[in-house]
Image (cartoon, rainbow, N blue to C red; front, side, top):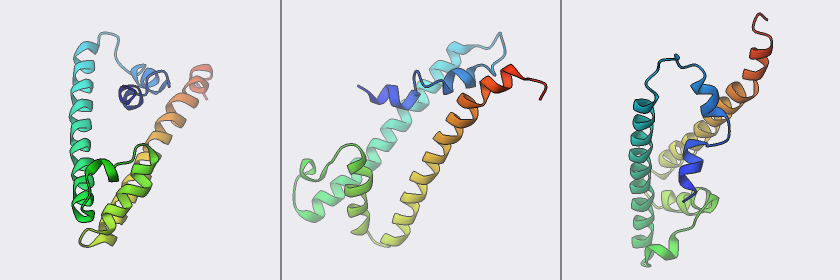
Length: 128
């Protein structure tokens, strides 16, 4: 239930700040449908990736998936690295995985910092 709030960053201000760059007559309904479709497809794709890795890990350990599945940060920093360590060329997969987490964190930080924090300053002093 909460995944939708986290994926759209509702009430965090980033979407509002990004929406302020739209033209007045922009077709926002088409934009909303497109964003919802892309978000749903991305969530399904990410779910397939996560559960395939958890299935691989459960198969390697000879247990069911619910025994290896963890939720929250434990999935990203405990269960997933354990599964990646059992894969072929583990150092490469591990580097790619943690680089992805780093880039996602930086992307969220840039959106929050530049759009939410600096936009009111630019609105107050547009000529500076």
